[in-house]
Image (cartoon, rainbow, N blue to C red; front, side, top):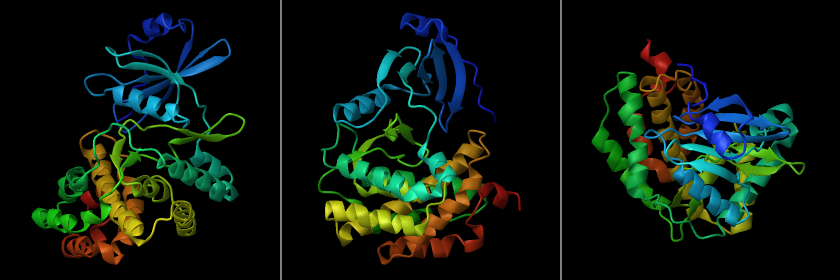
Length: 327
């Protein structure tokens, strides 16, 4: 189902009220949610119009996290104007240069760009978490359950749901944290912009931030659902991160547990986006996510969860749910 990129009815009045009344409104993108984005251009200046329509979307978390980040020196978009009733937000335009395309155009830049992204995470963990909800065991279990709630039924597979929950309960203790950090939760190459002449990293899509384990965003970056990350780069960036932080084996256990949890969640979400929301492009990303998941499951710390997968989802049923459902 194509996203309707007609500007929202109240956009022109909103722009007029904040000094952009004559701006041209150009469709930019929709995403996996109900949010849509437009670029507004006027007399050599530009900004981004976010359409986050209530009741489906609430832009207030985005505003809160953006302000928290900019107050601490991180490159989140500045907020120019906001209409709470309509869910319209006018934000700084970071341009079109994303980390993903920069690497696609120049693969030799991958190491330096991933290193910069890792360094942002090292800097982020130096700050106590913001006043966000905790990324606790209950939340991790709820997210992991998306795989058995959506993926398994989609391919006609009945599984041991109680056993799945029990298996995760045996390993999630490794993801508990003594000191929470702000976890942006969708930290990857499509949400990292190269901004300005210095091409420093700008942050996007952080409205779902929680207070949780520092390993989560590192997994999000290095086990990217939308592009292949060479295992040698993953290893090098983990080494870089640990050299800066002094993290030991407990951190690596958390990394693999959170990697498996995140990848199971994503498989469920991508299936839901197809089945519930009519977005059939997402299932094709699942084979890559399964590969990440299986790699994490190979580590001893994931033994109980790996055993559940071996008993419930045969290797030939780990893939694109849309293709498997049509068999």
